[in-house]
Amino acid sequence: DVKVTQSSRYLVKRTGEKVFLECVQDMDHENMFWYRQDPGLGLRLIYFSYDVKMKEKGDIPEGYSVSREKKERFSLILESASTNQTSMYLCASSFSGPGELFFGEGSRLTVL
Amino acid sequence: GQNIDQPTEMTATEGAIVQINCTYQTSGFNGLFWYQQHAGEAPTFLSYNVLDGLEEKGRFSSFLSRSKGYSYLLLKELQMKDSASYLCAVRDGAGANNLFFGTGTRLTVIP
Image 1 (cartoon, rainbow over the protein chains, first blue to last red):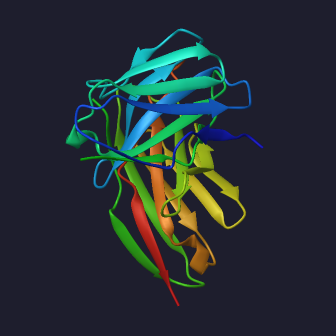
Image 2 (spheres, rainbow over the protein chains, first blue to last red; image 1 turned 30 degrees about the vertical axis):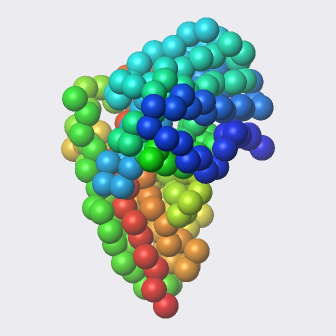
């Protein structure tokens, strides 16, 4: 079975803190994605990556950056967390070409 | 831009059939996905349509009409465990693997 693992299920941070969300997949997928999920807004794409050291902006990249130094790992970074970044963050991965995305369990971030 | 619409909430009775509709307007189209998401859990893949018609998988079926920008997910013989959110998502262009999601339909199955 494909496994996408996110490092933290729940985090509480203060405004201005730097936050790292880690995601690891074990199926040698080329593509990895970071979404955030908010009530009434659905899943919105923050960043994605097609290959190691490669990144592309999604729909809402502002306030976020990403890192993909190894194929299996895709990190989301909040350089200076703000309260409007309180959300559920979902990592996903997939093979290149057609095919479904496999999601991690999610990381619920609260910024105070 | 991308626009994907689905009802916010639906309620249905155990053992019944329910149809969840999804309409989309996207700049391109390269497939439509349905995901199920139980509260507090990750979305899990249910179905994929890229050609017009009905795809059946057990109690779940999904239909697509590309000319109408329309899809539905049909759930038969509803069970209590089917209470979840159902997410419609569209891949908008060839070679692009990211999905655009609707806001989801929260289905409640009642006894």
